[in-house]
Image 1 (cartoon, helix red, strand yellow):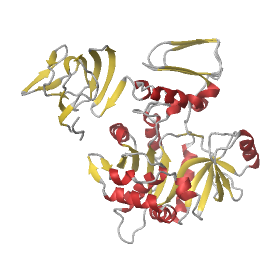
Image 2 (cartoon, one colour):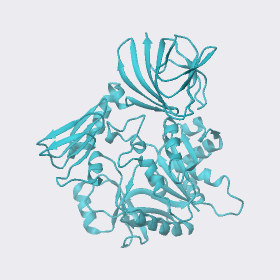
Image 3 (cartoon, rainbow, N blue to C red):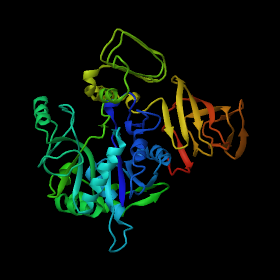
Image 4 (cartoon, helix red, strand yellow):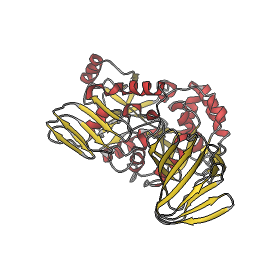
Length: 476
């Protein structure tokens, strides 16, 4: 059987201001109404011999990932949480140990299909056909990677050189993995015809991967094994040993395994692939108008060409411009030359150095129970719009430095305030004094919406003491 392993790490800084540290690109609906993570899982539907997905993600994103995965066609058999990032080789090792833990003695172990969570693939039929070819190779003990047939001299990707000429969906031994080239070298690769973009997608047996990792990267193998052996289940998640995993070296699967094994093969594919790595890449794969523009949201354009304009919250107009990326969010605006978007990471670095919130969170912040959005604030007050999902409940908590006023505008809330419990309906309100233990629950069948006004000397999100929480969040 094939076990998909979806790697959902990374921060997607080149897609700022939409992608941020607390809500990275793989969890955003950039191409349609579903996120890139959901698209990655959904496009596996219809494959033969397919198990439910294993998702590996940063602990910080666990609730968003769990909620999104529940809405996919295949769902997940496990969500493995990484306490720290250690690149792809250790992450895949965790998935391999998980795949083998319940294997019956003498039974055949699963073939892992490793997929990044942030790619776009237009030709799903060709993608399925390539996976079927790779599955047969992996069953015979080979390490399979998929090389994208290049259509331009791309300098932003690594390349795979095939040892022999191979057509689409054929199998060739790998001569070498090549780092990102300069333009002249990339043009030569395109001309030679036996170089393919490294897609970051792989197939191999779980046991074969671990044996190779133990041989070529024993420190990674040992630390990953110890971290997985210390794992425990928590709600929908598998929490691995934090201290053990922190000791694990950081390395990619390419360096740790694929470049060293003797039985690695590449399957060239032409599947309409993009890594959605920048705004220009997103522009290129979006459906453009007759002037090569793509607009989303409330936009008006005159004499505009070859541009990508995304209006999230307000009217955006353009006049007499060409080759621009314009991204408007509720708290940040990006205007960039289409040829310079690879350098957006420099802006993100500057914001991080200045400790700006805009690099970390959106005004709309997701929580396991729903979300909240800042409306207005000053030194002594903060106004939020809070949405609580049906049946969801916030933690029992208190604040040392602020009081709160709640006004219900939609739905029905059950409120706990110290020893008192009561119901609030639309147009009703309550006051939570500083230091009072309190809890909010949506007991209705529609989303609960309320306006919260915080007042006090300190209004930071870290002024919270939790006493009970259904989502496993403890303490402050």
